[in-house]
Each structure stands twice: as C-alpha cells, then as structure tokens.
Length: 623
Image 1 (cartoon, rainbow, N blue to C red):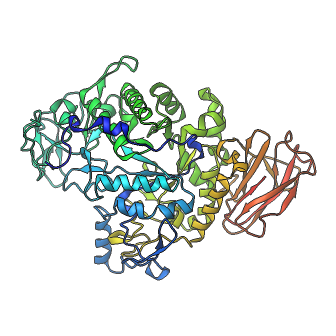
Image 2 (image 1 turned 120 degrees about the horizontal axis):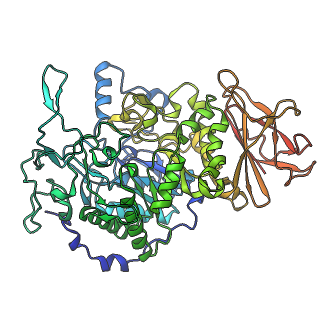
Image 3 (image 1 turned 90 degrees about the horizontal axis):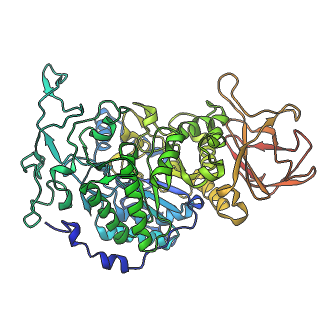
C-alpha cells in the first residue's frame, strides 16, 4: 500500500522542526474566500493572469455572453450537463494554486478550501465529505506535494489557508446487515432500512475496493494491509470500535440521534463518553486528531473549518480544540483558527465556543438569509443588524463577540436554509443588479466575512439539488451559466473590480473601523425632520440602508441602496458626540465614481445628520 498506513509512520520530530508560517494577529482583518476544489480551477484556462500578472495561454476560452446556455441547447445536452454536475468535474489543487494571483488581486486574504483527503473509491463524492483515508490527498485533486505547493504560494502572496476537516464521520466504508424496519422501496417491493433507534445494527463487513462488504468487520493487521482503496485508514481507525453503527439519522433534531446516527450513507464515528468536563475521547477520536495534526505540520495550513460540530459531543469538540491548538502553538502558529459549523442560533454558538474552545462559528442564526433578503428588500434591516446589537443577551458586547467569533456568509455550497430549492443570490432577475450591495454589506459589517466562490463573477446557479450552486468556474462539463468548456476568471468583470476596490479600502489603516469597530444601524429621514430606522411597510423595501462603524473617535458611515433601478437620497443620523454641525464627511468610495472625493456637511437634524445619495443597487463609504 503506497503512502502512510499508520500514524506510527509519521516523523513527528521532523514536522515540528520545519519552519512554519505564523498565524495572523487578527482574523477579523481577513477576508475569507470559500472554494470547492473540484469546482474551482483545473489550471487549463486561457487568458487568466498568474501571480505575477502575466497572461497565461490555455485550452479553455473565457466565457462570453454568447456562450451562456451552450450546454443546454438540446434535451440530450441538458441531461449531459446536469449529470456532469453530480460527479467529479476535476478541478485540482494545482488549479487553485494557479489562481492565487486572481484571489490576491480581488483582495482575499484567506481561502477556506473544501476537504481534500482520500474519498471512497467510486463514491462520486467530489465534495470530499466522505473520507476513506485521513492521511492521503485524494488523487482527483493531486498529491500531498500539490497541497503543500498551494499553501506555500498562498503564503507568499499574503493569503492564509483554512482547510475543511471532518471528525464526526467517515465515508461509506462498511455495509450494514440490517434486521429490522421493512420499508417500501417505491417500486412495489421492500427493503430493510437501517435507521437509528438507539441500538446498534449487525455489520456485513468493511467494503473492499469494489464497494462490496467482503473484508471482515475486525481490526486490520497493519503488517499485511488490504488494498489501498479498501476499508478506512489510518490503521488506528480500521477497527469496529471506531463506529457507532446505529444506522442513519431520520430525526435531525432528536438528541442523541443526531449525535449517534449516520448522515445517510456516511458512517458515524464513536467519539467518546462522559460529560464535557470529564470527557474520555475514544481511540478513534485520538487518532483522527493526530491525523489532522499531521496536516498542520506537513501542509503548514493556518486553520481548520470543522464540519458538523452540532453532531459532535461538546467534550469531543473541546478535546479537538485543545489538542489542535497545542500542536499548532508547538510549531509556531499562535493563533491557529478553528471555525466550527455550529447551527442552532447565537446562544448555542456562544455557549459552544465558550465551552469547547473553538474560535469562531460559521453563519449562525439566519445570517445568510437576512444578509440576502435585507439587500433584496424583503427583510427589515433591523432583522440583520439586531443579530449583532442584541448580542448582550449572550453577555458579550457586539463588537467583542461578533468581531472575530462569527464568520458571515450569504451564499454557500449547500444552502440548507432553502430546503429543496437552491439558488445563488444572483439567480433571480434583481440579484445581479444588487450583487455589489450584498457583497459590500457582508465585507463591511461585523464578523469575519466569507465570499463564496464565483460570487465576484455573479454566478447564478439554481435548482433542486446542491450541484446547481456548485458550478465549475473553470468550465469543464458543468460550467456556470449553463455552459460547457468556458471559464469565468474575468478580472475585468465590473463586480470583481468594484469589490477589489472596496476590499483595498477595508485594508487601509485609517479604515480599521470597517474591520474592528462597533456597529450601528442608523435612522434615516426623507424630509430631514422625521427620522426612523429603514424598514418595510408594505411589500418590498426600496431604500437607503446606512450603518456606522466606530473605532475610537472615528466614525465610518456606509450605506447600500436596495433599489436596483433608481438612486435614493436620505438624511442619515451620525454620532453627535463625534461630529459638530458644519463638519464634512468625505466620500471615499461610491459605485458612482463621480461621488468619490466629494463631501457632505453635518447638519443639526436628529442630533447630527448628513444627506447621502446612494446609486441604484449601489454602495457608498464616508468618513
């Protein structure tokens, strides 16, 4: 068997003695970009710019307007395109490396990379959340050396790397031999459905290279291992005791079912026992944690995004956080970041972080929904901003709690919140005209902002399956905008250019408030007399939505316009303690270039206010 088969084969002293890239001082200063490796780049695109800004020749042309829909011109073509999206499209780690210049020029300072470890052979799990070997990079993506090269190039260009990892489950590495729950199969027959009911199920065996359960459900002999693509690795987890073996989850909110059950075909790992304060990690959890320590040392990554934390015992999450932080500090990464996928609202996220030692929560408490629909005019802005203002309910000031403890997103790779109809922000008619506004709101409000890949090119995928919001930016058989064999790495795209300008502004020292300041939704007025928070009254809200970020004695005022068709003007309240009547606020950014550099005077209205005009679907920044 090629490669490592056991953690005992790792040269831990060598890993610790290598030079490692230091952690960022402040993660709230970063802008994260989340990409699925299989769907991002294969490195064969024509006309993109490399890290030095040089144009690269390649095989895949850039998409033009005429190319949109070229993959669905006939029913047969459309079926082929849809089918391609269900499996591997063959983006690579080397392809990601080739686009570091594209990301750096956009203003990205950290990339969240989807899981890259070896998947069950023939599973089609291109997303890589079904790991079979925790010590090997999946060959669809490349090699360990390709992952190392990606991290090295990213670091050389000011970009940190956060790797997506999984402790809760493995891939479908064994088969049940169920003995209960006859269930209709939809074709007139029945089958035995192994669904969770507290009790374990019989197991037929570990799966062999062909997927059949022919390997005894017993510990592996590491001296005579079976073929590389069989079972589950490293040898320390090739053991029946690794798994709960209690069948699939059917009630996702029932505890302990959601902690002990399988994610459909993925197999739940037995993590340990006991209370959080007296948790006893299982040998499998110890081994998995050690495997991820290996990747910190070997690949020099800067953080992990931990999948499905809700489904882990809090004691297991605490063990993981403590052991990974300690190892990272031992190699010089003092602020190695652990971002947990924690569902269930702010209070649950706060309590989970406090109890476990994880560093940040991802997209909690309807943040994605409210970000999207505030900008589209279908939510009151206070619904979004109150997520931050009311954080005193969890005993934290808003700028303390949200500044570096929450990763904010609006589009993502599975959109659980939307049920069976998935749709990127730009999928409806108004989305492309408001795309800058939602990106601007995301990157200039509290939290660590995260951009989902392709948002800067206004990708518009939608459909009844996750695949439709996972388009391949590099084209291939499942390209964006219902295309085939056309890429969209277009640095001339207006949205790319504007967001890069906004992110450059965000990085400037004098705009530290956009990264670390307190935050306030501001009252507005049309007549300069009657003020109130922007809100919906009947139907859609078409309005200026302004907020302030205050750091020490400096106020930065931002505003979007939810009307994509017309400019909107409003008096905007500003801090009376920081401004005097007659003071000038200067426009440092506007989607109307003619506004940039102009000034507005503070007047004695509602304490203090300035009159701001925001372009259609636009964004402005004043200071």
